[in-house]
Image 1 (cartoon, rainbow, N blue to C red):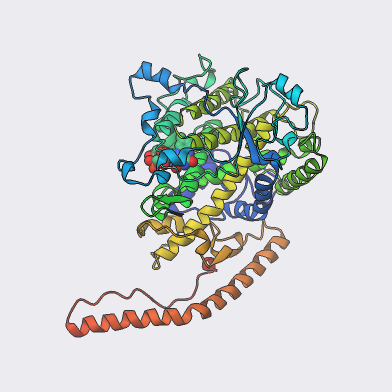
Image 2 (cartoon, rainbow, N blue to C red):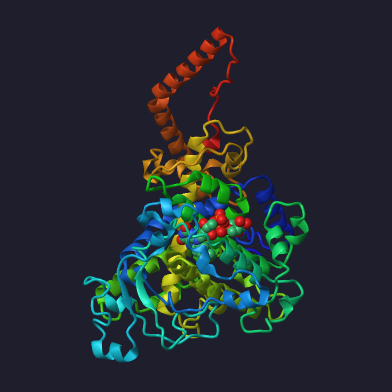
Length: 573
Ligand SMILES: Cc1cc2nc3c(=O)[nH]c(=O)nc-3n(C[C@H](O)[C@H](O)[C@H](O)COP(=O)(O)OP(=O)(O)OC[C@H]3O[C@@H](n4cnc5c(N)ncnc54)[C@H](O)[C@@H]3O)c2cc1C
């Protein structure tokens, strides 16, 4: 599948397979195209750097996108039904307290406490109450006096058969609560959700046999159990995966979305972790090594999700022009609209970073419906998450991905009137999910830089750093991310595209010039930094050499040198 941009889609058997093998077996090369997408890792990093300020501003500083309505407490977890069938433990509640020594931890640092929601919350008023209270103050200031309530309240209770997730307002009686996303950041809570993840992966993957037929029951709960191993193998670095990897694009995409979402949640946990002994928050490098750095395929899936969500946002460009964000507050309405349109415009500056048109084109009838049903199952499973904050973000993100899929597969970007309506919940979830992944990409860069600092003598393999650091895992440290004095220069998950020779056949001249200028700038900073840090380095070298000399003098074993002279490599700039 071709694209208008200089990077082509890595979709389809041969190219996909090659890029996938390359990524997983050796390294994630920043110039490689993210398999199943049409864009390289470094281009996505560049886009993320450019778009994240705008995303931050939208999600943190507009009432429309900062509050989310959901039914957090009244939904039933479907796992209990499986419990009867399979006889396995389905009581998720028993998994809430995860740490054996929770009793030794101060109350405020315990999983149960960390799980609770914070910040303002308001109940959704029914139709009658809405009429009584009027359009201006339907929530009567319960979210705070300064909140533009017309930006937050959701009047549209209808759902559409084209939805990929379970609408939050499904039940007529339980309309849910409005919660502040800003006051409830996604981070470590101590909740152990492995059972829920297992259920998600186990119950919601496709099998080759049943992919042509839609699920026989509305939830498709008992289908496709056996193919999980195949799909996981298709994304893991085992030699067997080569044959399985060629499974159909749609099934792969489904798995990658879930795995990418899981990776994003793990990134937030690892970068905002509570040391339950000292009570300090900060990055946990061991967590990063265990859950992400040693699994490049998970990082790849995270990048894939970024491409998918960004493409969906770009596709909404025309639709958003006619959208009313705050019916009772023209100023906020105009400001929110300006911000989101700027984001959608910027997202579409690089056309077709994900090519949805190649999906659901094969002879497998019913696949799209199967895909949709399975995604709905994932939504339902979020009600099994036994931690309020985790459930909030889990639910929001499944709605976000569901909305992205709805936009990608049900929207025609050139026609406006015929497209399905997007509920406020869906739009808020989509943009906040994009923000989650964007944040994860930036955090990965920081975690990687901190890990490199913690292991000063990397092995010589010229592999991607995420692979490199695996050989020398440092001990867990909790430092404040902001303490890192290397600033943005070292924070990129991968060295930027500029750090590599560009392909003159495919890169526009302006990109090449820009890339070269970036290298010159980075080299300049590198030299400056080297001069500043030189005295301290020299002192450390003298200490090491004195210690070696002392050992030699006493006849003890002389330790190997922990430093050497070498020229900086291009990708270090
Ligand atoms: C929806 C949801 C939201 C959550 N939100 C939070 C939160 O906000 N804060 C918090 O502290 N905890 C949260 N949790 C719990 C958290 O995700 C982990 O379950 C928990 O930290 C235990 O982690 P673990 O290392 O044991 O493995 P888990 O992350 O539970 O993973 C289980 C197994 O899945 C596989 N796996 C792991 N990552 C991937 C991947 N990316 N792709 C494919 N396979 C993978 C591995 O084999 C792993 O052993 C959430 C859980 C769920 C289900």
